Length: 358
Image (cartoon, rainbow, N blue to C red; front, side, top):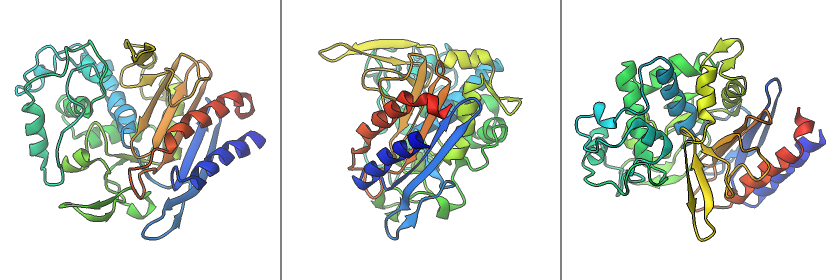
Protein backbone atom coordinates (compact mmCIF):
# COMPACT_ATOMS: atom_id res chain seq x y z
CA UNK A 1 0.00 0.00 0.00
CA UNK A 2 1.57 3.25 -1.17
CA UNK A 3 0.35 5.49 1.68
CA UNK A 4 1.65 3.08 4.32
CA UNK A 5 5.01 2.83 2.55
CA UNK A 6 5.32 6.61 2.38
CA UNK A 7 4.42 7.02 6.05
CA UNK A 8 7.05 4.44 6.97
CA UNK A 9 9.55 6.28 4.77
CA UNK A 10 9.02 9.37 6.94
CA UNK A 11 9.71 7.31 10.06
CA UNK A 12 12.76 5.65 8.52
CA UNK A 13 14.15 9.09 7.65
CA UNK A 14 13.65 10.07 11.29
CA UNK A 15 15.50 6.94 12.45
CA UNK A 16 18.34 7.69 10.04
CA UNK A 17 18.46 11.25 11.40
CA UNK A 18 18.76 9.95 14.97
CA UNK A 19 15.31 10.97 16.21
CA UNK A 20 14.92 7.51 17.78
CA UNK A 21 16.54 4.07 17.34
CA UNK A 22 13.26 2.47 16.30
CA UNK A 23 9.51 2.87 16.46
CA UNK A 24 6.31 0.88 16.35
CA UNK A 25 3.07 2.46 15.19
CA UNK A 26 -0.60 1.68 14.77
CA UNK A 27 -3.27 3.42 12.72
CA UNK A 28 -6.67 2.50 14.13
CA UNK A 29 -10.20 2.96 12.82
CA UNK A 30 -13.37 1.45 14.25
CA UNK A 31 -12.93 -1.75 12.25
CA UNK A 32 -9.38 -1.72 10.83
CA UNK A 33 -5.86 -1.52 12.26
CA UNK A 34 -2.56 -1.03 10.43
CA UNK A 35 0.72 -1.83 12.20
CA UNK A 36 4.37 -1.15 11.51
CA UNK A 37 7.69 -1.91 13.23
CA UNK A 38 10.90 -0.16 12.20
CA UNK A 39 14.51 0.20 13.28
CA UNK A 40 16.00 -1.22 16.48
CA UNK A 41 14.74 -1.41 20.03
CA UNK A 42 18.28 -1.24 21.41
CA UNK A 43 21.58 0.18 20.18
CA UNK A 44 23.75 -0.22 23.29
CA UNK A 45 25.34 -2.33 24.61
CA UNK A 46 24.21 -4.41 21.61
CA UNK A 47 22.01 -3.83 18.57
CA UNK A 48 18.68 -5.64 18.84
CA UNK A 49 16.22 -5.27 15.93
CA UNK A 50 12.76 -3.98 16.70
CA UNK A 51 9.67 -6.20 16.44
CA UNK A 52 5.95 -5.62 16.66
CA UNK A 53 5.85 -7.17 20.14
CA UNK A 54 8.49 -4.83 21.62
CA UNK A 55 7.41 -3.50 25.02
CA UNK A 56 7.84 0.25 25.39
CA UNK A 57 8.02 2.50 28.44
CA UNK A 58 4.89 4.62 27.93
CA UNK A 59 6.12 7.45 30.17
CA UNK A 60 3.36 10.08 30.51
CA UNK A 61 0.92 8.13 28.36
CA UNK A 62 0.44 6.42 31.74
CA UNK A 63 -1.51 9.52 32.79
CA UNK A 64 -4.18 9.14 30.11
CA UNK A 65 -4.27 5.45 29.18
CA UNK A 66 -4.07 4.23 32.76
CA UNK A 67 -4.88 6.83 35.38
CA UNK A 68 -7.45 9.05 33.68
CA UNK A 69 -9.37 6.02 32.41
CA UNK A 70 -9.36 4.32 35.82
CA UNK A 71 -10.50 7.58 37.44
CA UNK A 72 -13.39 7.89 34.97
CA UNK A 73 -14.45 4.33 35.77
CA UNK A 74 -14.65 5.29 39.44
CA UNK A 75 -16.64 8.41 38.54
CA UNK A 76 -19.04 6.20 36.60
CA UNK A 77 -19.39 3.89 39.61
CA UNK A 78 -20.19 6.84 41.86
CA UNK A 79 -17.05 6.34 43.95
CA UNK A 80 -15.19 9.45 42.77
CA UNK A 81 -16.56 12.98 42.41
CA UNK A 82 -14.27 15.18 40.39
CA UNK A 83 -15.11 18.38 42.25
CA UNK A 84 -14.28 16.90 45.65
CA UNK A 85 -11.31 18.54 47.39
CA UNK A 86 -8.10 16.52 47.30
CA UNK A 87 -7.79 17.09 51.06
CA UNK A 88 -10.77 14.77 51.50
CA UNK A 89 -8.40 11.88 50.72
CA UNK A 90 -5.22 13.12 52.40
CA UNK A 91 -5.26 14.72 55.82
CA UNK A 92 -1.67 15.95 55.20
CA UNK A 93 -2.67 17.89 52.07
CA UNK A 94 -2.96 21.52 53.07
CA UNK A 95 -4.68 23.11 50.06
CA UNK A 96 -8.44 22.79 50.56
CA UNK A 97 -9.29 24.63 47.33
CA UNK A 98 -7.54 22.07 45.08
CA UNK A 99 -10.01 19.54 43.66
CA UNK A 100 -9.75 16.30 41.72
CA UNK A 101 -10.83 18.31 38.65
CA UNK A 102 -7.77 20.51 39.08
CA UNK A 103 -5.56 17.40 39.13
CA UNK A 104 -7.17 16.03 35.96
CA UNK A 105 -6.82 19.32 34.06
CA UNK A 106 -3.35 20.32 35.32
CA UNK A 107 -4.72 23.50 36.88
CA UNK A 108 -3.99 22.71 40.55
CA UNK A 109 -1.16 25.18 41.11
CA UNK A 110 1.11 22.37 42.32
CA UNK A 111 4.72 22.25 41.06
CA UNK A 112 5.62 20.26 37.96
CA UNK A 113 7.35 17.56 39.97
CA UNK A 114 9.69 16.64 42.80
CA UNK A 115 12.86 18.68 42.60
CA UNK A 116 16.40 17.54 43.32
CA UNK A 117 18.14 14.12 43.09
CA UNK A 118 15.78 11.18 43.36
CA UNK A 119 18.05 8.13 43.22
CA UNK A 120 18.15 7.76 47.01
CA UNK A 121 14.48 8.50 47.71
CA UNK A 122 12.11 5.92 49.19
CA UNK A 123 8.39 5.97 48.39
CA UNK A 124 7.76 7.62 51.76
CA UNK A 125 10.36 10.28 50.97
CA UNK A 126 8.45 11.16 47.79
CA UNK A 127 5.14 11.52 49.62
CA UNK A 128 6.78 13.50 52.42
CA UNK A 129 8.09 15.96 49.82
CA UNK A 130 4.65 16.30 48.21
CA UNK A 131 2.86 16.90 51.50
CA UNK A 132 5.60 19.33 52.61
CA UNK A 133 4.74 21.75 49.78
CA UNK A 134 3.82 24.97 51.55
CA UNK A 135 2.64 27.21 48.74
CA UNK A 136 0.90 26.79 45.39
CA UNK A 137 2.52 28.30 42.29
CA UNK A 138 -0.76 29.99 41.30
CA UNK A 139 -4.42 30.06 42.27
CA UNK A 140 -6.13 26.77 41.30
CA UNK A 141 -8.05 26.96 38.04
CA UNK A 142 -6.32 30.08 36.73
CA UNK A 143 -3.44 28.55 34.72
CA UNK A 144 -2.55 25.32 32.94
CA UNK A 145 0.80 24.02 34.18
CA UNK A 146 1.57 20.37 33.52
CA UNK A 147 2.39 18.56 36.76
CA UNK A 148 3.42 14.98 37.53
CA UNK A 149 2.36 15.56 41.14
CA UNK A 150 -1.26 15.92 40.02
CA UNK A 151 -1.23 12.38 38.72
CA UNK A 152 0.76 10.90 41.59
CA UNK A 153 -2.05 12.12 43.85
CA UNK A 154 -4.74 10.90 41.45
CA UNK A 155 -3.17 7.43 41.30
CA UNK A 156 -3.17 7.26 45.08
CA UNK A 157 -6.83 8.39 45.22
CA UNK A 158 -7.73 5.52 42.89
CA UNK A 159 -6.03 3.12 45.30
CA UNK A 160 -7.88 4.60 48.29
CA UNK A 161 -11.31 4.41 46.63
CA UNK A 162 -10.87 1.00 44.99
CA UNK A 163 -9.10 -0.63 47.92
CA UNK A 164 -6.57 -2.06 45.45
CA UNK A 165 -3.03 -1.18 44.34
CA UNK A 166 -3.16 0.94 41.19
CA UNK A 167 -1.57 -1.70 38.97
CA UNK A 168 -3.92 -4.43 40.19
CA UNK A 169 -7.01 -2.27 39.74
CA UNK A 170 -5.96 -1.34 36.20
CA UNK A 171 -5.21 -4.93 35.22
CA UNK A 172 -8.56 -6.22 36.46
CA UNK A 173 -10.79 -3.39 35.26
CA UNK A 174 -9.00 -2.07 32.19
CA UNK A 175 -6.28 -4.22 30.64
CA UNK A 176 -7.84 -7.67 31.01
CA UNK A 177 -11.20 -6.58 29.50
CA UNK A 178 -9.30 -4.89 26.65
CA UNK A 179 -7.17 -8.01 26.12
CA UNK A 180 -4.06 -5.87 26.70
CA UNK A 181 -2.09 -8.80 28.07
CA UNK A 182 1.32 -7.21 27.50
CA UNK A 183 0.42 -4.02 29.36
CA UNK A 184 1.18 -3.16 32.96
CA UNK A 185 3.75 -1.89 35.41
CA UNK A 186 7.09 -3.56 36.21
CA UNK A 187 7.31 -5.89 33.17
CA UNK A 188 8.83 -9.31 33.75
CA UNK A 189 9.96 -9.95 30.16
CA UNK A 190 12.76 -7.39 30.14
CA UNK A 191 14.39 -8.76 27.00
CA UNK A 192 11.42 -7.61 24.91
CA UNK A 193 11.60 -4.10 26.38
CA UNK A 194 13.04 -1.19 24.42
CA UNK A 195 16.11 0.28 26.08
CA UNK A 196 16.07 3.85 27.34
CA UNK A 197 18.69 6.03 28.97
CA UNK A 198 22.08 5.25 30.49
CA UNK A 199 22.11 5.78 34.26
CA UNK A 200 25.00 5.90 36.68
CA UNK A 201 23.76 6.74 40.16
CA UNK A 202 23.01 5.16 43.51
CA UNK A 203 20.22 3.12 41.92
CA UNK A 204 21.90 1.51 38.92
CA UNK A 205 24.72 1.66 36.39
CA UNK A 206 23.88 0.83 32.80
CA UNK A 207 21.15 1.27 30.22
CA UNK A 208 17.65 1.24 31.66
CA UNK A 209 15.64 -1.63 30.19
CA UNK A 210 12.43 -3.00 31.64
CA UNK A 211 12.54 -0.51 34.53
CA UNK A 212 10.65 2.75 34.44
CA UNK A 213 12.74 5.61 33.06
CA UNK A 214 11.03 8.29 35.16
CA UNK A 215 13.09 8.74 38.32
CA UNK A 216 10.18 9.62 40.60
CA UNK A 217 8.10 6.66 39.45
CA UNK A 218 11.16 4.49 40.05
CA UNK A 219 11.47 5.87 43.58
CA UNK A 220 7.79 4.99 44.10
CA UNK A 221 8.55 1.36 43.29
CA UNK A 222 7.73 1.46 39.58
CA UNK A 223 3.97 1.98 39.99
CA UNK A 224 2.65 5.54 39.90
CA UNK A 225 -0.21 7.52 38.45
CA UNK A 226 2.01 9.71 36.30
CA UNK A 227 4.46 7.18 34.79
CA UNK A 228 5.53 3.55 34.91
CA UNK A 229 3.19 1.87 32.44
CA UNK A 230 4.68 -0.41 29.76
CA UNK A 231 2.83 -1.62 26.67
CA UNK A 232 3.01 -2.79 23.07
CA UNK A 233 1.63 -1.05 20.03
CA UNK A 234 -0.93 -3.83 19.51
CA UNK A 235 -2.22 -3.46 23.06
CA UNK A 236 -2.53 0.32 22.74
CA UNK A 237 -4.51 -0.18 19.52
CA UNK A 238 -7.12 -2.05 21.59
CA UNK A 239 -7.42 0.96 23.89
CA UNK A 240 -7.84 3.33 20.94
CA UNK A 241 -10.47 1.08 19.38
CA UNK A 242 -12.41 1.11 22.66
CA UNK A 243 -12.42 4.92 22.69
CA UNK A 244 -13.49 5.11 19.03
CA UNK A 245 -16.33 2.67 19.74
CA UNK A 246 -17.73 4.76 22.61
CA UNK A 247 -16.28 2.62 25.40
CA UNK A 248 -16.85 -0.87 23.96
CA UNK A 249 -14.18 -3.36 22.90
CA UNK A 250 -15.13 -6.67 21.28
CA UNK A 251 -18.60 -6.50 22.79
CA UNK A 252 -17.32 -5.65 26.30
CA UNK A 253 -18.15 -2.27 27.80
CA UNK A 254 -15.15 -0.78 29.56
CA UNK A 255 -16.40 2.78 29.94
CA UNK A 256 -19.82 4.31 29.36
CA UNK A 257 -20.47 6.53 26.35
CA UNK A 258 -21.21 9.36 28.76
CA UNK A 259 -17.71 9.07 30.19
CA UNK A 260 -16.19 8.91 26.69
CA UNK A 261 -18.11 12.07 25.82
CA UNK A 262 -16.65 13.75 28.91
CA UNK A 263 -13.11 12.86 27.84
CA UNK A 264 -13.53 14.88 24.63
CA UNK A 265 -14.97 18.01 26.28
CA UNK A 266 -12.60 20.95 26.60
CA UNK A 267 -12.47 21.77 30.29
CA UNK A 268 -10.16 24.77 30.39
CA UNK A 269 -8.45 27.04 27.87
CA UNK A 270 -5.88 29.79 28.15
CA UNK A 271 -4.03 32.01 25.68
CA UNK A 272 -0.26 32.16 25.89
CA UNK A 273 2.67 34.02 24.35
CA UNK A 274 2.89 37.25 22.43
CA UNK A 275 0.57 35.87 19.76
CA UNK A 276 -1.94 34.71 22.41
CA UNK A 277 -2.10 31.19 21.03
CA UNK A 278 -4.75 28.93 22.60
CA UNK A 279 -3.80 26.05 24.91
CA UNK A 280 -6.55 23.76 26.21
CA UNK A 281 -7.02 20.63 28.31
CA UNK A 282 -9.70 18.00 28.52
CA UNK A 283 -9.89 15.62 31.48
CA UNK A 284 -6.35 14.23 31.43
CA UNK A 285 -5.84 14.72 27.72
CA UNK A 286 -4.52 17.61 25.67
CA UNK A 287 -6.55 18.79 22.72
CA UNK A 288 -5.63 20.30 19.37
CA UNK A 289 -3.69 23.56 19.44
CA UNK A 290 -1.24 25.35 17.08
CA UNK A 291 1.74 23.47 18.53
CA UNK A 292 -0.02 20.11 18.70
CA UNK A 293 1.91 16.87 18.31
CA UNK A 294 -1.10 15.70 16.27
CA UNK A 295 -0.43 18.27 13.57
CA UNK A 296 -2.78 20.69 11.89
CA UNK A 297 -5.20 18.40 10.05
CA UNK A 298 -6.96 16.55 12.88
CA UNK A 299 -10.42 17.77 13.84
CA UNK A 300 -11.14 19.97 16.82
CA UNK A 301 -12.70 16.88 18.42
CA UNK A 302 -9.30 15.25 19.03
CA UNK A 303 -7.58 14.20 22.24
CA UNK A 304 -3.84 13.60 22.35
CA UNK A 305 -0.86 13.13 24.64
CA UNK A 306 2.88 12.55 24.54
CA UNK A 307 5.41 10.73 26.72
CA UNK A 308 8.95 11.79 27.57
CA UNK A 309 10.55 8.55 26.37
CA UNK A 310 9.29 9.16 22.82
CA UNK A 311 5.69 7.97 22.85
CA UNK A 312 2.70 9.85 21.47
CA UNK A 313 -0.89 9.20 20.44
CA UNK A 314 -4.01 10.96 19.27
CA UNK A 315 -7.65 9.98 18.81
CA UNK A 316 -9.73 12.00 16.34
CA UNK A 317 -13.36 11.24 17.09
CA UNK A 318 -14.87 13.15 14.17
CA UNK A 319 -12.66 11.41 11.62
CA UNK A 320 -12.90 8.05 13.38
CA UNK A 321 -9.16 7.41 13.59
CA UNK A 322 -6.48 7.00 16.21
CA UNK A 323 -2.72 6.85 15.93
CA UNK A 324 -0.01 5.72 18.34
CA UNK A 325 3.74 5.91 17.92
CA UNK A 326 5.90 4.11 20.47
CA UNK A 327 9.58 5.02 20.30
CA UNK A 328 12.57 5.30 22.63
CA UNK A 329 14.08 8.64 21.68
CA UNK A 330 15.87 8.78 25.09
CA UNK A 331 18.14 5.87 24.11
CA UNK A 332 21.00 6.33 24.64
CA UNK A 333 20.40 9.85 26.06
CA UNK A 334 17.54 12.24 26.78
CA UNK A 335 19.48 15.03 25.08
CA UNK A 336 17.62 14.43 21.83
CA UNK A 337 14.82 16.66 20.61
CA UNK A 338 14.81 15.53 16.98
CA UNK A 339 11.54 13.61 17.37
CA UNK A 340 9.45 16.63 18.22
CA UNK A 341 8.97 17.90 14.66
CA UNK A 342 8.53 14.34 13.36
CA UNK A 343 5.30 13.74 15.32
CA UNK A 344 3.30 16.49 13.65
CA UNK A 345 4.78 15.68 10.24
CA UNK A 346 3.68 12.04 10.47
CA UNK A 347 0.24 13.02 11.79
CA UNK A 348 -0.28 15.47 8.93
CA UNK A 349 0.69 12.83 6.40
CA UNK A 350 -1.73 10.33 7.91
CA UNK A 351 -4.63 12.76 7.98
CA UNK A 352 -4.01 13.90 4.41
CA UNK A 353 -4.15 10.25 3.23
CA UNK A 354 -6.78 9.02 5.67
CA UNK A 355 -9.17 7.64 3.07
CA UNK A 356 -6.51 5.16 1.96
CA UNK A 357 -6.44 3.65 5.46
CA UNK A 358 -10.20 3.31 5.87
